[in-house]
Length: 147
Image (cartoon, rainbow, N blue to C red; front, side, top):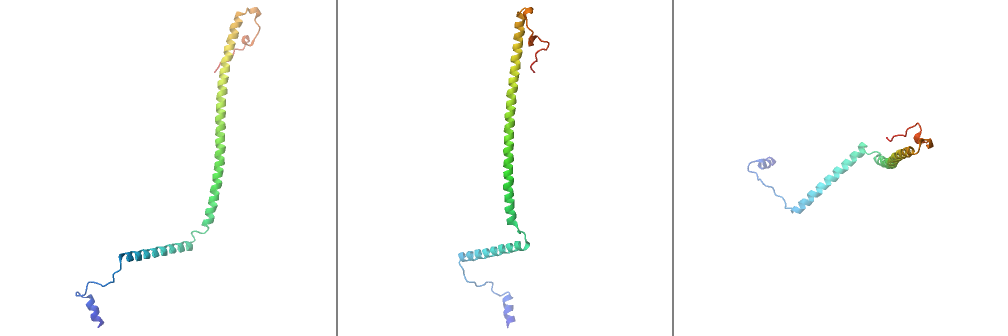
């Protein structure tokens, strides 16, 4: 008897429809979302268990804290070195400016010295040779020329 029923269902004359109860579409969506959420939670749980079993995160929190402390230390060292470098740079600029100013003053003083020596020579020429004293301008050493 069962054979006849089975053959009737698989034959060409079998019915092509199935009877289902109607469920509203919001209910279908809610059930689908619930099933999807459950599947995602199950997958996350399996992933976390897999990480624990593999030992990937052994000591990761301690290492992270250690690395953060090391970063703070290195940053403070860098800031100190940067401060020293900035101070040295400003001192170097100050010294260069002072050196340039002193070089300009030396050049000005040499020009004034040459002008004074020329004036002394001019006035010595006006004085008769018997009354001329031996000065630096008439010595055997000629005055230095400005560079």
